[in-house]
Image (cartoon, rainbow, N blue to C red):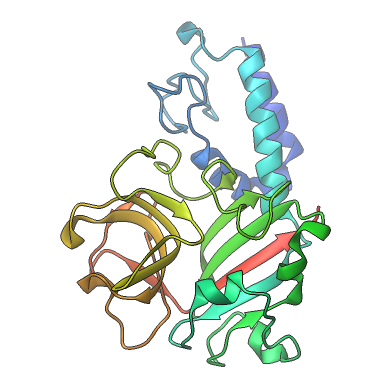
Length: 275
């Protein structure tokens, strides 16, 4: 006999059939479905008190209908954000094109608004783009923000944020993140040495790391994190022939940064959506 929890979840899947590829990504990113401390990620197999296409184990007594409803509500928000066809490119930075990316974002400057090539999601033109809309953020009723990194025109990393009530500097936080490929980002300790989740990031005389999502510092050989926009190199893994450089963890967990483990992108882009 199919329990109520499973019926509700299967109905949610049925309602979102055309969105299943993105839906599976969302499911993998949901944390603490049944027990925040004991269950860090949603499991798709073995039915251990977390969502499974085949079985939800009722004897665990934690998959009650209230939690299922909460999950579905969260799921809907995330799917809506991922599937939005209203994304508008408002910022694009190109690897090796020079300039200070944080200063450009934080300034009241617009850049290359009339140049269509600057808006293409590749590095054919070594020039950045910034829409004047960024400087009028609070008047636009922005609901979602997407950060996307591209390699050779292919989107390799996607982060989606709830931007309701934010300004251009406050939407990029852990609390506002609603979708990412990283299973460990929600449970990372914000009190760890070197933890960052901010646009400004870590700026010193000898390094500059922006749009920085970092888990911990323990010397260059043991820095662990997910994403960094580099304007000045403070460690060997950040040394490139030109800047800015965009590095990120290529899998589903934070990585210890080395030239061998990190991935790098050609383009760093920011999109907004109002619905």
